[in-house]
Length: 493
Ligand code: SF4
Image 1 (tube, helix red, strand yellow):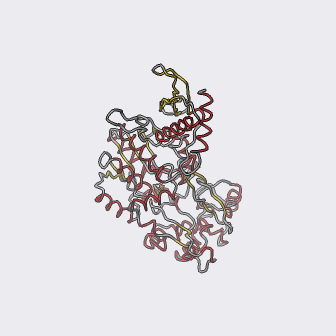
Image 2 (cartoon, rainbow, N blue to C red):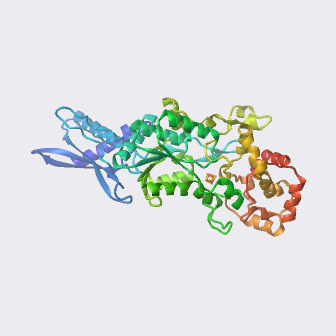
Image 3 (spheres, rainbow, N blue to C red):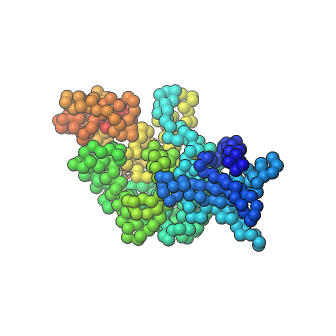
């Protein structure tokens, strides 16, 4: 009876509750049912289990135990199904299944146990088109807008549930906040749970947009935040002098400057990771909440799938909690509008196609071609095709500082002039360049994948050629080539 009932319940559950927007998946192994004798009366004992609470790989653990009368009539059967589904749903979102009354204690949600990544509380399974790229009708690389198959209210509940659990078991909670929109949202959610029991860690790279510092000052005052600020162990500009611009990806393991660490990794380590590590080691912080989202990039998605929303980070010796892992970009902005949360003004500085080109097709007019993010503004890892056009329009002082004073125009020009026929690369380097495959930078396009260099970029030319080039063209001229032909210049070769 119980076995059949379980099948009926599973089928019915799927039909009723697995459709958007309030979908919850239910794997057959999540539910077990038996008929037991309770107080002399045959009763259904239903257990809802989650795998991976204690042991990430395999162990299933009961997180909900409920008893139901054995239904006698079809209507009673339907009622039982509905009741069970509701109980599971409440359990998953961390709400009390039954409020306490004078005569009856509350039935709490999962006590101190975190949801597993394969369940709805993780949410990733319900996001469609996460980090899916495609080419539009004009062959331009685009990213699909990820779609969440759950409502904002549900995402909020899940995040709040996770934060409540976190605070219940944490002695010294910290939240990392870069004052970008994601971490501000995570902070806003945390403040809905507690106004005081946490410290905010701001890894100040010293190369943030001024809007970031302005927002930090505003929120610090308005929300009465306890902010701890870290500073780089070595500045970006000092690293630039030593190792050049960090065009390489973080995972790039090719040897540079005698090290197999990419320039970007060294840079992130000196500016963000080491200061953060030193801070948590000195203070013994045991929990850190962050605003990381799976929808941001493939790397983030992979780590979210691997680590889930709560995990123990061996490197940091602390628990990390990512309550908004499953928020899509759309949900983020829906939340910001719903609660009128302050965000950095940088996000409003959008670049449109007509800002870049003298004439654009009707269908492109009014379309955004570059949406800025907060973070380290001179970071070469973040330089996308239209980043320079954006920087030039909205932050001209920073743009010219980078191009002229810090030598970015000369660096890019001397590395890429051969692509527009202004210089010829060394013959042996040319062969090497053509034989090399694999992405070097985020800026690669199909057009440029054939010509990549794997060594120090300036060695594409001999020294005389570089000198001649730099003498022949003014910085302004170089800059014009770079912004007019961003694809070619954004690729390191
Ligand atoms: S984001 Fe870029 S500039 Fe900032 S620390 Fe990392 S590599 Fe360096």
